[in-house]
Length: 381
Image: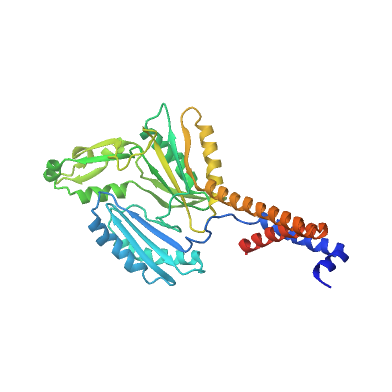
């Protein structure tokens, strides 16, 4: 007695088996994360260090890249270590063995990097340690245009309101903004006055860095509460920067910064440009972590952009330039259509040549459920 005969004689049992297969397939399919080339870029952590003052590539490699490489080269389960040094920027990328806990690897990297951080130049900005490959293309690129705001004003809005929100999205590794000059407070020193007052540029930088901070001064306890006391030293206006004392003369008078420098609320020289349809704009590149799902991250980013565009309606327009989620959804849709076409052709051929409607009915039920269940389970586990 073959399987077809058993299936015909015990129809209830056969129906229950296939219903169970269909149920498991549907459950697995709803929980299945769709991703193109899943796992291809996992196990990668990047360290990005940018420096102020335009350090040349050779100095970046000698003073930043090599000390970082020496510090993290002993990380466990490290497969490959490669770096890129360019003007005012160092990028070190680590590739780990498959199957390791990336959270633990990132913790070990932060520990070893913390030891070398005090040895790096003072000109560096806050380092970025992210679980992603910086060489990967962004999963989403969008441009912001406006008929009333300049590229500099758009950039200021993006840096202050949009970039922090996107950076907090689960799965987003970095948000890079291009176009529009970045707003900075420029301090232009007068060399003749610096020589006259015997003030060095290093002393000015140290005083500015030490003065522009808020510190915790202690706690005040009451009967019900414990209140934190903070000393507010951060600059609020450009005038406050000029009033900071830089040097004391022999007579005891204090020399303010505005006596030896010109303080301007201005913009840095443009390091990049962004254009869309020949018009200047601000372009944002969103990159995900190597273990995050592209479609989930893209949907969250799109929801944030919709709310942002609604709030800024009439001021800013958001134009999606590239969205990798659309490519993945289209690719998965093509695979699904190919499976359905193959299933239908198989049923038609079997029905025409065998002319056994019972057998065709069994195939009609078994083929789609088997395909769906197998496809779902292979990707789910």
